[in-house]
Image (cartoon, rainbow, N blue to C red; front, top):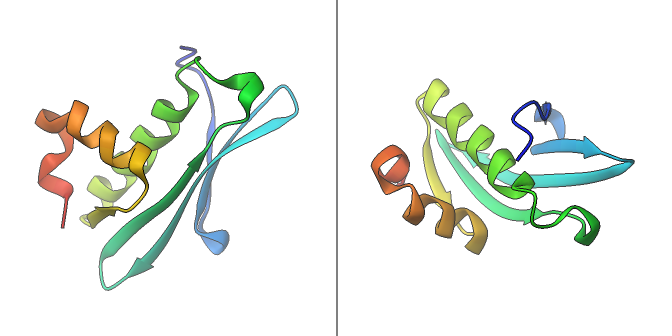
Length: 94
């Protein structure tokens, strides 16, 4: 995975994005009362298998930690990521 991928946080759209080769990977969320609910992770098929989804989810979870927010992983990809990295992120789950 390319660790130098820039994650763009579009707070006004409740979304994190990574732009690669003219394509956009996204992590969508809703926010209420100090809780971020991650609702969707999308990576274009052409970019699959490069760790881009994991990279964007990590950025979202790190943002939640930095702000002191709790997390609800409605998105199955985010849920699986938290389970795989439970030592780092299970404490964030609401």
